[in-house]
Image 1 (tube, rainbow, N blue to C red):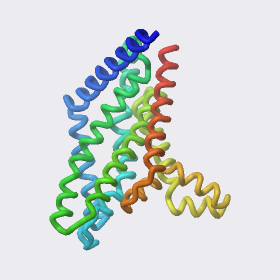
Image 2 (spheres, rainbow, N blue to C red):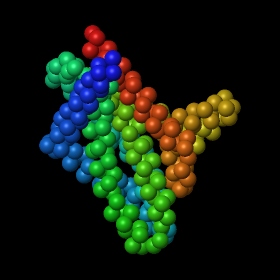
Image 3 (cartoon, helix red, strand yellow):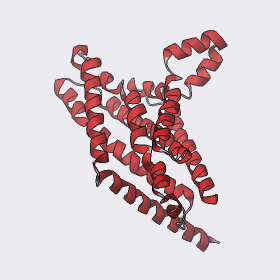
Image 4 (cartoon, rainbow, N blue to C red):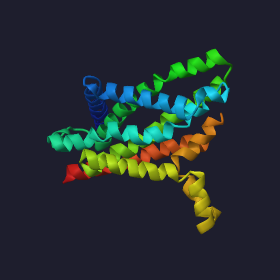
Length: 256
């Protein structure tokens, strides 16, 4: 039994690595990753310096920079994840992929990690802004590092939603629209205007419950330099739930 389990895990690991390398190559051996990263950096820079008035704050921090992360993730990350499963269905390669001697979760994780790597590369390329803040003043670098880590986890949350819905929709455009819509619900739930409206209509209990599922609510604590374990648990759990749904939908396709 132990030998069978070890063999299954070895097959799952091999499939995960193969899918990860394949998807990463699909991103970086085509213009897709470069266009995404360049557009993301331009958009983030524009929002930070133009709308966020970065230099007008006269403060050595990255608050105007991190403020726009959830909203840009909401649009940009579904754009790179919508193809992961929908493209397989369109190209007729999904059935071939599902014949691999590996569990669905290894295929799901391989694709997700490839997209997350692209997001990590884009986030890493924003560090010159962090360097410029250190040149201009003396920021709290520990707080900035923490916010980067939580931002990376938050990006994983948006990607997990998009990956799952790509498998469910099997059409890139539909997957993108659904991912943005669902992502918006999990973002807007923590906005003050939504919380105030829910409090007035249904009481504070429901408002707090809805806010606890908001991707943006757990990010705000990190922006203040506060590490909350519940934020880590939330983001990791959020990613796990959507990847589990992704695996279920892919398994259903395999079974069908």
